[in-house]
Each structure stands twice: as structure tokens, then as C-alpha cells.
Amino acid sequence: MIFALNVFEPYEFQFFRNGLIVATIAGALCGLLGVFVILRGMSYIGHGLSHAVFGGAAASAVMKINYFLGAGIWGVVSGLLIARVARRRVIGADAAIGVVTTASFALGLALMNRYGQASKSIEAVLFGSVLGVKVADIYAVSLVALLGLAVVVLGYRKLLFSTFDRDVAQVSNVRVSLVEAVLLAMISLTILVTMRVIGTLLISALLVIPAASARMTTNSFSRLLWVSPIIGAATCFIGMNLSYHLDTSASATIILLDAIVFIIVYAIAGTRNRAKMASLGHL
Amino acid sequence: MIVCEHVSCTYGNAPVVEDVYLTINRGEFVGIVGPSGSGKTTLLKAIIGSQPVAHGSITIDPRLTIGYVPQVETVDWYFPVTVEEVIVMTRTKTKWWPRITSKERADVREVLEKLGIAEVAGRHIRELSGGQQQRVFLARAMFCQPDVLILDEPTSGVDVRTRHEILHLLADLHQEGLTIVLTTHDLNGLAAHLPRVVCFKKTVIADGSPREVLTPEVLEVTYGAPMDVLEHGGMPLVVDHGRVAMRGEGK
Image (tube, rainbow over all chains, first blue to last red):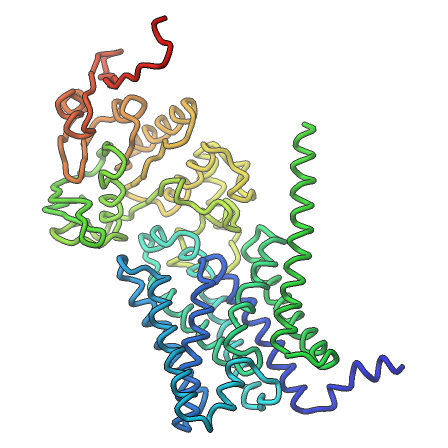
């Protein structure tokens, strides 16, 4: 009975309920888009874009303009800029991400140093904070999640084709550049609405670890699109609850939980593969 | 049908393809041969539109549908897709519904049966043999009912038997009226059997029938190494001149 009371204790607080809803939806959204991030080898883009959006968030806080508007425009522009710079083959995508996002992050830090009074909200963006989550965040993350779902369902075939084989997709009249721009814009928006809970520094993990864990459980693309969001949502939900009881940072607890899930799946998948190889050896 | 005029392509500042003039007519079966790094794949990619052309122009009849088969080495075999999912990809432009329809499933079965691999439809692509891998990507290209089939190294990494099967399969498709352009390293096993061969090293060195093109002079310019050409069964047989003396040989 005492245990049951303890488990439900955080739900008495509005800030926790808001944070829990945002984190769970964000986990599912990051899990969904994370499938494309890992299959396209874009992990570094997730990492870079979260740093880029930090610059936008800092600028918005300093200029006292709406966070979603300022950081959102900044994030989408950074995503498109990366895609544009990366098209110069001599530079390469990884260097393009490095240039655009670290410059943006540095700008954010400089603004933080120069205008110290805004540092509190900037720190919340950097490390995430359940306390800072408002009802508007719930609407924002729900809207982006619905948009993400619509993009994946309606663009399923185009996304699959251009992810698997970019050149042939282009020959088959798929507008690959448009597909990639939409995907980057969606990842930017996801980072934007998730950042307040998870924080800039750990958000890329949420885009990578659930999808990487899910990838080891299935060889089916469509199943991957189910399993990854479920892992993302479940780890965020459980991680938020654990963080309250353990008195640890919500983002750190969520990411650690994701890492534990990854290690378990990795160990099971490894054992299964070894068993498969051993059975082949007997043939 | 496909006309390349004064075509040059670059990677950075380095020219990879220089001043190419090449015309592919309807119903032809053309093999482009040349050493590694000679720009064969770049030329194919320029033709299909995925490689920008720095100079010159490539004119393609806009009504043409092109089926492209990439080098199997460039495919991510760990990607989570089944054979069926790979094949329906080429109808992406006209379909959006995520699930494969029963009509599409029947069409996939038909094309796989034609290529003799109907049993692999539900398999993950990593579970295929070398020959099956080539056929699956050929099936994907065939699925959009192309007028021209463009293949990059269709016989690389396959055994002799599979190479024969692929060659016969392509010959049958050519007989049915398909225009085929392919690149290959394989002078004796593939190029010598084709009606038209283009020797390529950044630009067109020679263009014609195997008998006209596969000569010691042309091959030396193309490959930068001396080669002999013999006659075998009415076809030219290219013999590598290079001979390495092994330790202990002749004792």
C-alpha cells in the first residue's frame, strides 16, 4: 500500500504530469524519426541539429521572442543549410554539420555569457527541465507528433526508397531532395519540442538508442516503425517516474534506461546469433 | 534514344569523364568496358541523372522509362527490407499506401517467376545468394516496365555459372526488344559476347563490335598494359600479357 502511494505520488504535481505527457509523446516521436536517422547514418545530424537549435533558443530568450518561433525557424534554417552545404561533395555532410551547428552552438554560448539574465532558461534548454514544461509544450509536441506520423504514413514509400537507394529513387522520379528536406525539417521540429524536457546535450541519444535497439529485434522496416516508438515512449515514461523517485535528472535517467534496454537487446541478439551459427555448424 | 555530346563530369576539381560522345539507339545491347576508376559508373550515373554534368549535354527521349541496376557492392544488405519490398520500390511515384497491395504482390510474383527466383519473394535481402541478389535488382528494374535497362557491373562477384545465367537472361530480354547498356570488367566472359562494345577510359577510346574494338592496340590504351588477343570459337579472347615469376619456378 505504501509502495502504491509512493508510485503515484509524483502524479499529484501538475508539472510532473505535463512533463510525463511531453516526454512520452516525445519518446515515441524520436523513436519514429530515429528509424530514419539510424538507417541513413544521420546520427551526427541529430546531435548537430540539437546544438544548432540551442543557438536559436538562446537568441529567442535574449530577444524575448517566443521560444518555438525563434528556435523553430533557427532549427529548420540550420537543417536546410546543412543539406545545402552537404551538397558540395568536396566538403561532405559531416563537415557541413560540424560547421553549421557548432557555429550556432557557439553563438548560443556567447549570448548566454553576454546576457547573463537569460541564462536560467538557456540552462533549461541545455540540460532539460521538467519544471519548465507548460501546457503549450504538450500541444506543441502533440502537433509535431501528429505531423511526424502523417509524414511517415503518407510518405512511407518515398522515405523507404530514398533511404535504401537514393540514386535509383531519383531515377524513378522520386523528389529525393524534397524528401530529405522534409525529414530534416521534421527532425528539427522534433528537437525543438523535445528539448525542454530532455535538453540539447542528450536529445540525440533519444533519436538514436531506441531505434538502434529496435533494429536488433527485427528485419522488417514496417515493424521497425512500430517497435522503435514503443521503446522510445516506454523508456521515457518509466524514466520520468524513476527520476522522481531516485531524485535524478529526468533526461539522464531516460537516456540511461534507453542504454540499459540497448545492452539487454544487444546481449540477447548476440546470444541468438551465436545459437544460430552453432546450429548451422552442425549441418 | 540516348545521345551524349561533349559530356564531362568532375568530382571536386578532378575530371572523371571528359568530352564523351556516345549514342545509344533503340534495341541496342552495349557493353562499356574499362579499368577501375575509368569513369564508367560516373557516365552511367550521368545518363540516369544522378551525377551532374559539368560540360556538354545528355539528351534522352522524355518518354523513355529507365530501369537501373546498381553495383551489388553499393547495396546495404543489412537494410531491413524483404525482396518484395525492394521490387515494388520502383512504383513509389504512383503509389503512396504503405502496404503492398494484392495486385502488386501478383506483379512481383510474375517478374520473379520470369527471372526464375519466385521462391525468394518474402526473404530478407541478406538471405540471398550472389546470383539471386543480381536477379532481385534486375527484377526491380524490370518492375517499372522499362524501355532501357542500365546495369552497373552485373557480373561482378558472381561465379562462372551465375555469369552465364545472367548473360543468357539479358540476351533473352534484349531479344524481347529491350535496349540494354551495361558496364563490365569482364572482357572474355561478357564483353566479347555483346554486339557492341565501348572501350572507355575517361573518354571513349573505341566503339564497335568486339572484333573491331578488342584489339591489342585499343586495349593497351584503355588498360595501360599490353594484352594479346587470340581467336577462340569465332570470338576474340583477351589474354593478359603480364606474367609474374614465382619463387622457385623452373627448378
